Length: 143
Image (cartoon, rainbow, N blue to C red; front, side, top):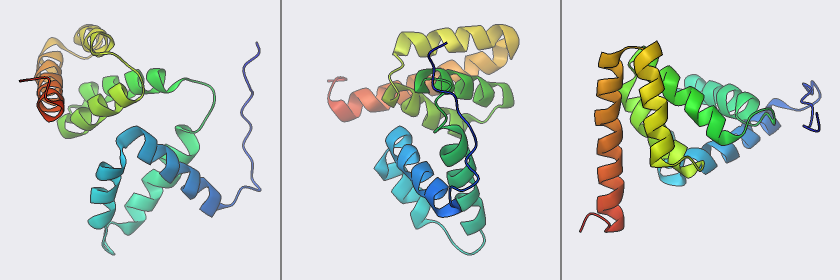
């Protein structure tokens, strides 16, 4: 296998991991989303925002073992399985940013109907349709 092997680097500073996480977070979710999230940080939520930036984005999303499209497909499935509909909408947009097509997102939702539940997939289709409609409206494609 020619894939670069990931090894944990204990010498990497927490600040470096955070910075790398913020870079990936911005690439995947977009500056506007991250700026809105950061604008709402207060002493109560600061530790949580740092945790997700450092660990979710800086430790997991930066790993070379899976392409971002695969990470997005896994994340979409997890959001569907757990009924995290607002997060699903955000990650549908992120999946498109990461290079997934609408047809691939449809296939993930169909697969989720079997393993997560038909009712969950039903809601997921509605959420994805809403995201697509908003994106089409914003881009003028809905005109």
